[in-house]
Length: 173
Length: 302
Image (cartoon, rainbow over all chains, first blue to last red):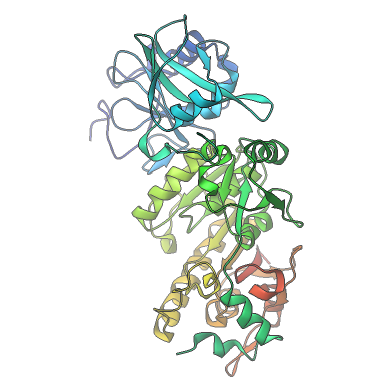
């Protein structure tokens, strides 16, 4: 098999920079660090000990451990970012894991809004910042905790929480 | 057929054992310290009005007074993971450290493997394997919800597992939480014994021995392998240890455990086992009001 295309059965480590890129269109480590820094103000140092991998086209993984590339495995670390579309989209789980380091594009939801968000509902919100993928968060047990990713467009926050992660929480109205 | 009857010679208070097996288990969750401290997780439960009681022997375990622990904020955020009290024991015995390489040979659905990752501060390398692709999807879902980033997931036969895909050629420790006849889960699954047969025990014991042997071979000298099951059957516990002790370069070692336990048995139905199997621990449901369990710690390169 050529190593110049994406192979759905194996994970390939991302090239460090465009100069080392072999698979056309594949994101680089540097582009990925820049994305988190520019979009959410998460400092590149947060990811210092992580390696980044692609399995299939446009599905990126973050891994903190030892592995050789390419690797035939079902999973390596966590699915982290989708890069197939023009606008890159973080996963719910990546935002829950790393979103607390974000310095911008974080929208804090009130309790009732947060409950609607995790149930998968779209809702109008008061936000005068950028449109696009935001980190939705709420206040829980004394601190701000990231909930997941919402797409803010036309005054509405569209919950991107995948079906399997949605919950009807106890204690709501 | 009354399966549990066969264990009367092993259990000192058999009536209490039988009575405990008939009671349902309390709902227990483990706090996932990759995402939250036990204090913060308890604060969130307080805010939601969900009552709980900390488990005395393990600060990260809570008995919940709720029939829907999955519908709490803590569950949504991956701060809490439903895990039976006694099944948290083998990862604690492994005690993995940051930067260590750890093999979870039969890892799905992932309660113990994600606990291994958390114990190493999500800074080790946890290789979580299982033969069942269906059960692996549950493991992957759990690992991602709990924020585990240090785990590689593979779908292979543990009996002839190859480390070739990795950058290292041996593990620092391994956990063999073996497939078994599951008698000890009777409190959780009242139909756990419906499919019970001696033929199954014989065949699964051969598999258990092969997996444990492979784990010993794949672990560095001085490293440890933890063997656990949720069955009372000596054929699947002490007999497996006895065979592996004579076939591989390893020995059983003592380990501490805050739960009340009984030593491994050295005789069963006319067969005698290596005396060192007494270092293994049996946990009967009536001793601590938990499920049934078996756990042993093997040091490699005896």
